Image (cartoon, rainbow, N blue to C red; front, side, top):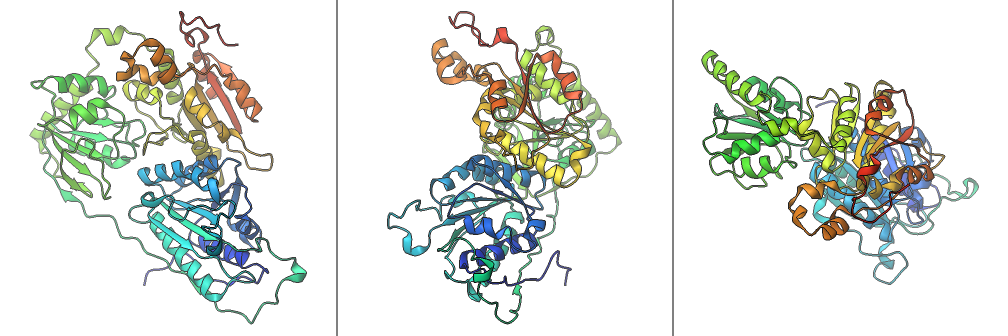
Length: 573
């Protein structure tokens, strides 16, 4: 029998005078025993038993609690904590009613990006549901197919939870953690019914404990081992596509097979001798010419490609390209619906000396500097230069979190290798909760001791920053993340200027797509308690190199570029 990673039983809590609190203490003990280290809670009444329970016995030493006023910020903070340390998934906790709806965006991102997340929603007991009782809605199945497991746990007995109720809770929580962290990781949802009283009785009024009760058996599920690799013939013209989260396996495959590596910024593979910098523009030209000497006949895909239309449409959608997807999960990426083969892992014989020489020559042709004179002559936009400054400042011990904006596409086209870790919410590529995710990553790193050896930075556009201003709202009693939030502020969504919407009438494009806002982001950040500073793009390298701690917001601006010259608007001060 394999050694179990934690305790085999959960002790029955001493009676608290509230069945809801008894059950909550048991739940927290179970989650802590199964590896949960962080809880992010939003304030509320129906969830009070879980809050009171966090202060019972040794739980304050086992679980670090973080409080966020905004439930969406709470959920994305928990997502960031889990993303940094998926072996120890974080839990997010809300009260009943509309509070539960604000978790949905984070649950969706966790599902699509395969990040474990424990979602706990407090609810009314069964006798109050469907009666019009205040803050009562249909929340048990709210997240439905986005969860790996969902359970609606009945409210325990009011005066004290029974042995059967506690045993059911422990067993269900163990199943939930196993599902969240198993072979197909993702979010799980426990909807927890609670009856009054929602708070423990005063110590003098608590029931006397019965005779020592036996511990509740805790189920540990041993995950399956890594999948067996499948032998796949490699075409000499093949390329390796490393999408978001591909990891080092993509680089290792490309280097072993001497193949060009087309790696997105958040792939975890953007480095090494096979990397092709600036591949989007080159690939677009290659795929536009059926007779181009670099045209691939095979594409091997790892991770989740999301950024480049030349990759997703022109390459993976081409009728003459054999697409092989390497992914052990059932929801593998195949947006063009042209994958011929999906394998859980890949192996291939190494090329012989003659073939290796041919592939090196082919790879060198992919890696030659761009021959197009107009691309070399065109100056980079100041926004791209700012993004590259943040990219260049990312050292081996640092973490860079990228928002979903034109900046990540600037990096895909212009950035070279990176030494540090790069993360992004590319599961759905939304702008929701990005600051909160980065804060969660920073909190997890500092809790594990890694925060002292590197810096966590977030690179976002101004709309993404505005969309999660509540991610900066961290109360005075909360541990604050060591985080640099770098905002490239050009007063709107530049990304739409590079999509087909750019052909819209200028007034329509400006109002409904680029959406200028005229917000003083430095003042907004300062009002929410963050150190903030506005600077020119060329000042970024020095600011990022300076020693720093805590939460600070660096806003890069070129004031003259924030307003259209013919808009009739005065520059914002």
